[in-house]
Structure formats: C-alpha cells, structure tokens
Image 1 (cartoon, rainbow, N blue to C red):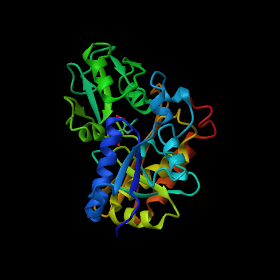
Image 2: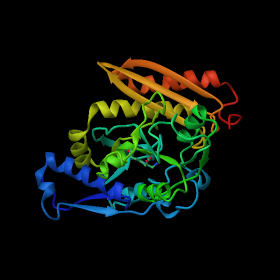
Image 3: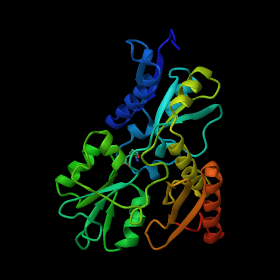
Length: 312
Ligand SMILES: NCc1[nH]cc(CCC(=O)O)c1CC(=O)O
C-alpha cells in the first residue's frame, strides 16, 4: 500500500502533541513500513485557539473544541489527512463528515500529584495552595480537603513545574500519560488512585481523526486501532455526552476491563466540591456506548431538574 502523495499528519505544536503525533506515525509505519521512507509522511503543526490563549482559564474562553477546531478545519480543507488528538480534548459530538478512525493503546489514565513535601492529598499542609485549571480536579480535591486553596494554573508541563519550584503554589496535578510520553517518568510526583481522583473521560488516550470518506486512511487507521481502548473511551465519552451541560461542570469517568466485563466509574461534582454524585455500572464489551449512556442517564435522574443550570 504505497501512496504517491505524502500522508499529512496534523497536530498541535506543544511538545506533548508532537510526541503523540510521532507515536501515531510510528504505529502507522509499523503496519506499512513505506510510511517510514523519506517524504512518505509529513507532520504539520496547526496552531489552535487553546494554544494562542495561555493566560485565561479555558472555561472563561468558552466553547468546546479549543484544541481541536483548527485541526478539524484543516481536515476539511485537505491541508491534512489525519489529526492526532488527546481524546480528552475532543468534544463528544464530532463535526459532520469527520470520524475517529482509531485509538492507540491507552497510557496510564491516572492523575499525578506533584507537591513540595507531600506524597498524598491527605499529606498536603493545612490551607495549601493548589494550582490547577481543571474543574474536575479542583472539585474532587475540595471534596476531600475543603481547607485547600485552589488557584487557576494553565500552561504546559514545564510552566506548571516552574510555579511549583518557585513556591508560588504548593501542589499541582497533571495527567500521568502526558508526563510519561514526555519521558519525564512521574516527575517526582505520586499517581493518585481513581478512588481518590477519578480521571477525566478519555484521559491517557490518543485518537486519530479523519475524513469519513477517505477510504485509504480509514483502512490504515482501522488496522492499527486498539479495540479495548476504543471500548473504554467510547463508554466514558457516552457518559460525558449524556451529562455535559457545559464544560463548566466537573465530570470524571473511568472505564476498565475486569475480565470480559466493562466497569464504568463516573462522577459529577459541584465545582466547590460540596456535592459529589458517583455511579458504578457494568456492561458487556460490545455495549460500550449503552453502558456510558445508561450510567449518565442514571446520574442525571438523581440530580433532577436543576442540572445543569441550577447546579453551579
Ligand atoms: N488538559 C490538557 C491535556 N490534554 C491531554 C493531556 C494529557 C494527556 C492525556 O490525557 O492523554 C493534558 C494535560 C494534563 O491534563 O495534564
């Protein structure tokens, strides 16, 4: 399967995004070694809105797909053939004509706690300042430790670590997957178990998006897609889709395989951590989407008519 024109791979320009784009290319080239030849594939960096605005919380900038919109436009415009995404950043409803053709094997989905002098949430000093821009992390943190002070902290891994180093914040949390892919190990931090800090839906998963009518690319992607990851992420995203009133709602979800069965743990919280609704639900591998939808509907019913508008 050789192609005369290069396969154009779109990605954001952050070190993590570039590492993920290279992983995607490596996976494709493992199946079709011709892609490793010079000129057979090209990684193109596309700047997204989320990359341009670094000084404000994403919830304030508003809108979904801040890290994906420009990549999707480049797909439509045929400037790229595939777009490599952190699935965590991909809106639950895809634009017409685009689809996720593959997911790479998932990395560790947990969050890592990085703190000066503490290795657990319980071990953080009274009133410690925690930097995060994630409503999900902040809400779960405050539910456990209402004494902590959460301040908004965005930016790439290096920037966040520098704030910790300088003493501006006492702790922060990052996705373990990002650290591992940047070859940083756990960066001196401690992974948090899902019981304590449930990850974001799709955390640790890389997805590849393409034009639905591009048969050659669809075939390449289907051949390398990791089915267990696809099922888990499909479950988590279905849960999110049913529940997501806006991106201002803290929502977490993690699906895992326990033998042949899919287990979904999910939660919705108030941003200040004063209420946390949890759900656990099981299903067959073949009904990933139904499992997520069922669990989402279950939580929605419990939250009642006030969700999401009267919830915040
Ligand atoms: N919110 C941005 C983002 N999107 C994906 C990752 C990490 C990689 C992943 O979850 O696959 C991160 C950084 C972080 O949350 O620490």
